[in-house]
Structure formats: C-alpha cells, structure tokens
Amino acid sequence: MRIVRFSPGPDSGLGSDPLFGVLEDDSTISIITGDPIYSGITKTAASIELSKVRLLAPVIPRSKVVCIGKNYADHAAEMGGVVPEEPIIFLKPNTSVIGPNDTIVWPEMSERIDHESELAIVIGRLCKDVPIERVSDVIFGYTIANDVTARDLQKKDGQWTRGKSFDTFCPIGPWIETDFIPGTQKITATVNSEMKQSAQLSDMIFKVPEIINFVSRVMTLLPGDIILTGTPAGIGPMVAGGTATMAIEGLGELTNKVSRN
Image (tube, rainbow, N blue to C red; front, side):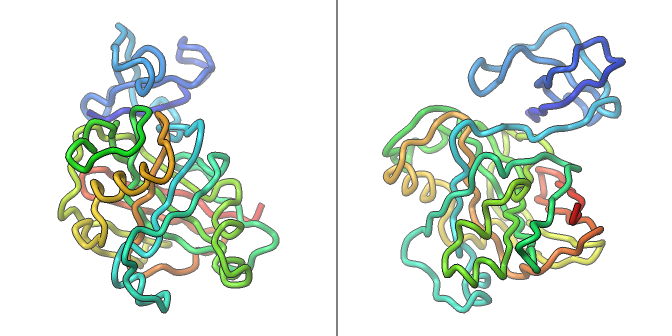
C-alpha cells in the first residue's frame, strides 16, 4: 500500500491543509482520516486525482532522522575507511526534511553539496531494544531519501553534523510503501540525467533488522522517526540549477531541484 501526503490545491474543495491518502492505481488517491502512523488507515469516501495534487514529504518526523554511515563496503572504501564492525550512527534534524520536487537550497557557507541515495525506514510505533525477530512489528513502511551532504564542511569539521543538517538536506518520498520488503532491489542516483550511483539493497553491510535492533538499543524510537540506511559508492557533487533523482525499484523515484537561491 502506497501512502501519500499531499496538498490538494485551492480548487479541490478539500481545504488547504495537507492530507494523507492511499495511492490506489498510480493515478487516484483515496483520502484517509488523520495521520496513518498515529490513527491507522481509514479511508473516507473522498478521492482526488494524483495529477491534481502536489506531493509532500510523506512523513514529517516529530522527533529525529537517524542515519547509518558507511553501510556499503564500496562506499566505505571510497571514503577512505574500512568496513565498520557495527553500525555508525549520526543524526539529521527533522527540519532538514523536504518532499518530492521541493528545492534543495545550497547553503552559502558551502562550495560542494553531494547526493547520497538511500533506503529510508519509517518507524510506526514507540519502541526500545527491539529484538531482531520482532523488527517488522515496528516498521510502518519504506521510502526513498537523499542524504544531502556539504562535503567540504564535513571534511573541514572532522565530523558530520553541520554538513548534513542544513534545511532542505533530507528530501524523502515520493510515498511510503507499507508492503515493501528490502532484498536485491536496485538503488540508483542520477544527476542531470547522468547515472552516478547504482547498487543493490542486498549490498548493505548491516541489513534492516540489524539496524533497527542496534539503533533501538541506543535510543528510543518514536512513531514517525526515519532511519536512513546508508548509501552505496558513487557519491558526488550536485549542480546548482540542476536536478537529482534517487530511485529504488519498487519504491519509485524522488526528484529534487538544486538552487543557490
């Protein structure tokens, strides 16, 4: 089931507030009541065509975005590091989240911002110390993310917080797929129509069950939290005035513009 969050538009008769819905057939959205992560999925009688709405980030994390670093061996190598013995955790603020077709804003203090295509897990319930065999109980679904990084600032600071935390630096979308099962699906990044990253989700060093088990032993996870699972090799700069498209088989494509304004 594909869960979307959208702005219905002034002529829809549905008001101006963002709504949630189920994308039924790649063209029609059945509107649901409330936020499905908190209220469950209850359809109303109303529907709207996908072509008439503006898709938004499918979830706005009320708490945090947790990220896993160097979770593909080829990416660890290109960053000059060895394969980690356990997941490397860092955080992005929830204020960095934007949706599909929104603009990634290039911060004035950086000269280089990179794309990082990633599978994103959306947490569906409060949880702590989740056993590996029960990880599926706490997952609401999956979406695509671009872990945008000011690479020069990351190198300058010697750590990752500033370089990954600017507003607009965490595009996610286009929807949440509740039935997705990570396996050998292809993950890619394309910048201005040129393929830059290409791998399979099965190339991840630490798989989803290990990641959630590990992270939840460190911190309590809340409904709506997002976990980014790492990026494969091929990271590189985006271009002001261009576009960046992250894609995962079975989840669709996430495209964003890049601008210095």
